[in-house]
Image: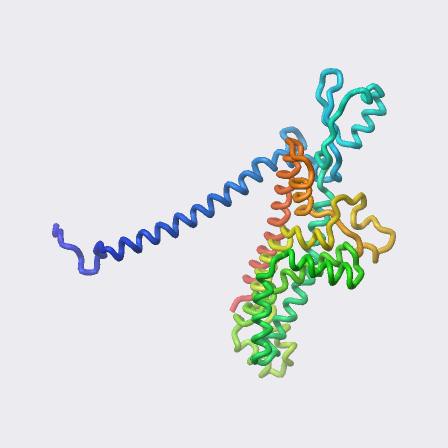
Length: 346
């Protein structure tokens, strides 16, 4: 066999070695980021699953998922270590009067569950995303389909891009001043919805406008040539094909809205609330009440109370449930997007 190199065979050189080194650095950086993410999520799943699941039937800690947070009482009774939530502790005291002489240690928010936090988080995400999608898609339709390209419109697009980089704490202070104080909505679901919606609005507008631009121009021209009005053309021939891209923006928005603590801390969240949102006398009161929320609960349990082994279970369990809820909502958006892509193709 001939040992001569083929004329098109790559030959080693200093430039190729440098390219190989750069490629290795890029790959190493990518794997490092993935490893860090896997370690973080793995820790949350490993430690948090113990608070959500159990080894005995029904294998699900229903107390943690269906009850409100309580204080945990830890004490010894007849040589046995007892760990009871506040409600069970009072019942136990009534049955055993001599417990009053036993010294017990109490740990706030370390018993019970996080059901009010789950409900509040789901309501905040769904309400804010509904408002953001309505306003964002409407603004994108105007900018892409109706507005003439000029200095003012270019300035508006630049302002929208700049708003995407504004810190969440600024949106929280804006929502507190505008909705809580000026409009008089107080700390409520409505104030939280609009604050979170405005925070995610730049992402929704930008992604929706890009989705509308991706729809072929011929779809519009063919519809107009057949006598349809501009709005009929947009509604029937443009929006259906742009929906998959619009839902992509909703997925990005859900991830940001659900994880924000500062905006809801100023506008919507309570540390503790006894009643669930639907336990009101009038329907109108539903929108003007505060709620508990998972990110704010994690913040309070992690930083505002003394740390111990009992609070750690609540921290990781809450974070685990929080990730599951965000993943479920995002998965629903992804499935809907895939179905729309299969239905509307060109």
